[in-house]
Amino acid sequence: MLIINNFSKTYKGGKKAVDNISLQVKAGDIFGFIGHNGAGKSTTIKAVVGVLDYEEGEILVDGHSIKKEPVICKKVIAYIPDNPDLYEHLTGIQYLNFIADIFGISAAAREEKIKKYADAFEITGNLGDLVSSYSHGMKQKLAIISAVIHDPKLLVLDEPFVGLDPKAAVVLKKIMYELCACGSAIFFSTHMLDVAEKLCNKVAMIHHGKIAFAGTMEEMLKEKEGGSLEEIFMEVLKQEK
Ligand SMILES: Nc1ncnc2c1ncn2[C@@H]1O[C@H](COP(=O)(O)OP(=O)(O)OP(=O)(O)O)[C@@H](O)[C@H]1O
Image (cartoon, helix red, strand yellow):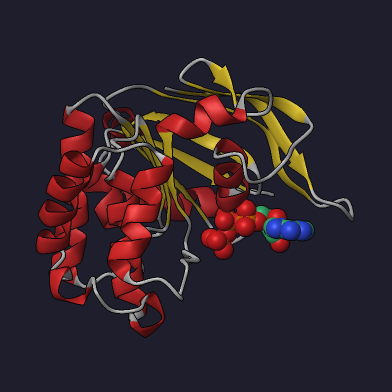
């Protein structure tokens, strides 16, 4: 579903944020992308979803280049940034219908999905309110519903659990499992290593723009002989830049 080949990103001013990384996310994977602050996670994620241009490497979504065929790719991607910017002057339901319109979702299909997920996140009663009146967590819930409304083949999330209450976090994990069971792929960044350890079947650790480890969670935990993901992460941090 997602192939990143030798991707590098240097920002204007010369900062090399990501240095020659290669990763693969397959259908059914819940792939956790972890790394310290400033490691290059958001830079990679933004390039994957086509909101950040890059010069080096290749990124393919479902076999198509995000650079050369962005619309084809974006039809199958859903992206939830760390701080979703939603249209504040719309009501929740207007926003969801707007997104459903963009993706050409039928009235019946969107109604079913909106009911299911809004009920699960307990925001059904708020859908008639303006987004500007929503709390941070409510906006995140709305962003998640808008992301899954079109059954994305690739769901990309940047720090999705930050700001969600524990119940909402459980709902999101369930949604992630369900999507993967239906053959979608999930690629997400997180600092919550205990969550990643339980949730992900694959993981990559990025350290100062380079991949320090990429593989299955099982391989990673085995390679490091019984250490938790948190302990392994602390070991990686000790490495030289
Ligand atoms: N627009 C930009 N211009 C210049 N440098 C940038 C820009 N955006 C990010 N960087 C730099 O690129 C590096 C990687 O940043 P990035 O946001 O990808 O890190 P991150 O792993 O997502 O960090 P965090 O966990 O703090 O969100 C950092 O050194 C950051 O300062």
